[in-house]
Length: 287
Ligand SMILES: NC(=O)c1ccc[n+]([C@@H]2O[C@H](COP(=O)([O-])OP(=O)(O)OC[C@H]3O[C@@H](n4cnc5c(N)ncnc54)[C@H](OP(=O)(O)O)[C@@H]3O)[C@@H](O)[C@H]2O)c1
Image (cartoon, rainbow, N blue to C red; front, top):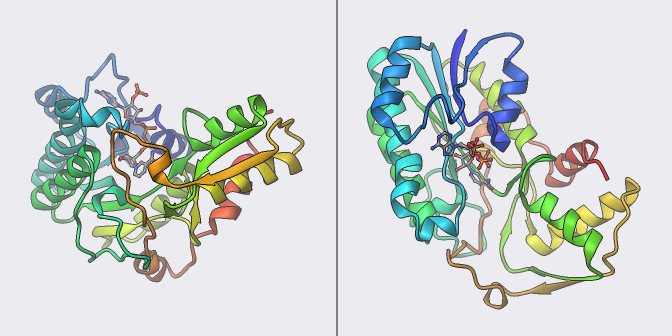
């Protein structure tokens, strides 16, 4: 199958590329070959290459930067998916798109399902929600996977930041009142491919690991597993702090618990726990 895949240097895009490249024809232009904010070029590119499936793993994911780079965030997170969806809808091909827990307001303590009310707290969340709405309007058959707290053994993310800090410092202070499901890019790619075997799959699905943790708990588990793997760490004390002690330009949801029941029911299988996903990713981390 001919697949147009965006964002292959990103966390999720890379894992998808690795799993698809040997069995499919992947069209994945580099940023230099195709700036994804140039929407008329994107449309021309699609028309010239005629893909049978579009997977959009590109996004403006710098949550704090989005508060000031509003136009760029909306270009990548709203207008790009809208353009891809228009093409997919018009040509009757499938579109896979990714969204985020940041579309939800994050109040309460309970996990949200896909029907929960959206109300983003940040520019990033607003731009992603507008993208979801546009995608569903232009391409009702599109699949949107809402994921959260994404990390990978490669690139800049919470896992690699924690490992670096833990090698440099004896004491760390980590936010303990934001709760979610740390989800590896590998789990996302594995389950997207499983889900795509279902030809009738469409609409919004939560795709995160099972179980919940605060960033503080996630950091502690990272350090425990890193030590078990023989990584040399300097860190001795990991303090839990409230979000109010770690102000950031973008407001983050406190409750990012997402129910994955809809996807698990569709696939007839459970998603892995966040601890197991971390173990699998940690095996690829080099000291
Ligand atoms: N990261 C998270 O914690 C998180 C949480 C919830 C949902 N999500 C969603 O999950 C999806 C995948 O996220 P991710 O973490 O894998 O993203 P990522 O690692 O930040 O990768 C984003 C990709 O988009 C590409 N890109 C951005 N602007 C571009 C442009 N103008 N032209 C061409 N390419 C451009 C980047 O290219 P370069 O490599 O060249 O910069 C990069 O490859 C996104 O839809 C994101 O919103 C992520």
